[in-house]
Length: 603
Image (cartoon, rainbow, N blue to C red; front, side, top):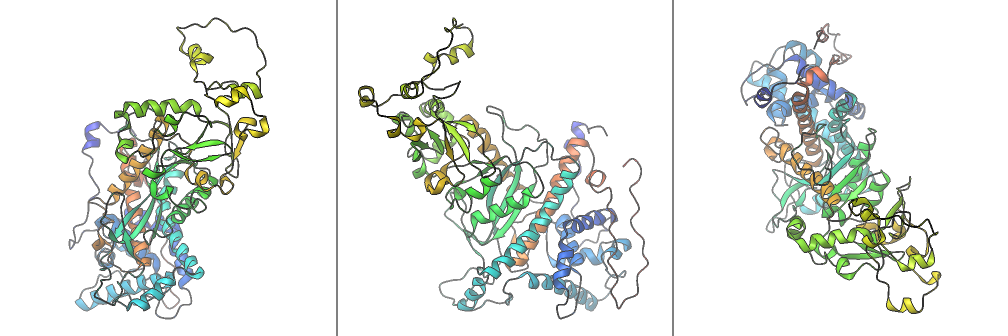
C-alpha cells in the first residue's frame, strides 16, 4: 500500500474515545484483537491455574476481567471496574459476548446491574487475592503496627517470590505488543539501545499523618522524589524500559524513527526500594525476546546503586553503559592497575592534572550547556588521546582488555617510558609528509601529545616491575565486577563522559524516556491520574498500570504503522485474530456460537 500523503498523515483520525455514560458499540474485530493479545500473553491461563481449586464461587473468569479492563483502558483511558462493566455489558456485539462468556442480554434493572458489577469485582478480587503475598483489608486504614507486619511480608523470601511473579505477569502483558511488532519485522531498525528510568505512580490513599495512629490503605506505598524536585509524590515507582536509539555525533534530533518506540519493560514497586533490581528484572525479561543488546542509559539514581545489583548484571546481559554523575563524583574517581579512572574512563597515569580535574566540582548546568563553555570543551577534547584503547571487547563474563594509548600500531600519544620498555622495530625511513592530507598530518608523531614523565625518571629509570601494570604489560584486563574495586565497578562506563559520542548516546536515550513518560501520562492514557485506576493495593495497581501501558503500546504501534505504511493495526498485526469461545462450565450446556470471519482478501 502506498504511503499516505502528508496532509492525510497530519489529519489522520485519532482512535475515538467512548465518552463516559454514552452507549456505543465496539466492533468485534477490535475485541478479537485484544483477546488475541491476552491469549498470546499467557496471563489469563496462568491465573486460571493459580485459581484452580480455591474455595468460593468462581465468578467471572480472569480472561473476561482482564479483557474488560484492557478494553476500558484502550477506549476510555481508564482501567476501572466501572468502565469495564459498562463495556462488557452494554457496548459489545452478541458474538463478542460469546467469546467473553457474557450473557447475551444486558442487565435491564438496577438490581441486575448491581449484581453484574459485583460479579466482575469479585472476579478481580480473586485475582488480586491469589497474587498478593499478604492479603489484608484494603477498604479501611489499619493500625500502624498491623500494617507494618503486612508490609514486611513483601520482603521475606516467600513474599519476594510472589512479588516477582506478579511483576513477571505484568511484563508479559506489556511485552506482548512488542512481540507482535518483532514478529512482523517492525523492530528491525532498533539496535537494542534502551533507557531506564523510574516515574511516580500516585494513589488515592492519603499518607499517614503525625496525629493519626493508622497507616495508609496503600501499606506498601511510599514517597517518590523526582530528580531536582524537593516535593514528593505518595504512591509507587514504575520502572520503565523504553526502546530508544543513539544518534551519530553531530546528528540533529527530529529524524523519523525506523521503529516504534514502545515501552519494553515495566516493574512497579515501593519507591527507593530495589531500584536496581527492578531495572535488571525488566532487562532480563527483555533479553528473552532475543533482541540485540545495545547501550543502556540511566540517570544518577542508578549510578549510585550498588554495582553488584545493577552494573554487573546489566553488563553480563551484553549492554554498554552510559551514565551521569553527581557533582561530587566528577573528575578523578579512582584507579585500576595504575590507570586513572577519570569520569568513568581509564586513562594514562600521567594525564595532565588540568585535564583530570576539568570536571571536578562541575555543576549540572555546566554539563547540560557544555558547548557554551569553550575551555571545558577544549579540555574534554584534549582528554581523548590519553584514554586507554580497547584491545578486546567484552567476553561472556563482561571482561574487557585495554592497552596503553602509546601502544599498538596506531598510538594516540608519545611516551618515552613505553619506547624504553618496548622499543619499536625500526622500519623504513618515513616518507615525506603531505601537509595537504589531513590523515597524514594526524598520523605523524609530532601531531600527537607527549606524556610528561616525572623528572626523576629521566635520570634514574625504574625497572619494569616497579612501574604500574598498565605501563609494564602489553594490556590489562578489567572484569565486569572490577575484582571488588568499588569505584571502578560503580563509575566505569563505555563512552567517554561529555564527549561527542557520550552526548550522542546519553541525551537522546534519556529524552526517549521522558517522551514515553509524557505519552503515557498524556490526555488519552494518563497513568498518573489515580482516579483512572481506583482499585487499592500494590497487586491491583501493578495489574492496572500494566494494562494501561499495554493499551499505550498498542496505540504507539498503530500510530507508527499508519505513519510509515498507511496501514492500521488490524491489517498488519492481527491477521489471525480468531479468539476461541471459553470452554463451557461443567454445569452448563455447551453453547453453539460462531467465530469471527477470516480477514478479507487484500487487507
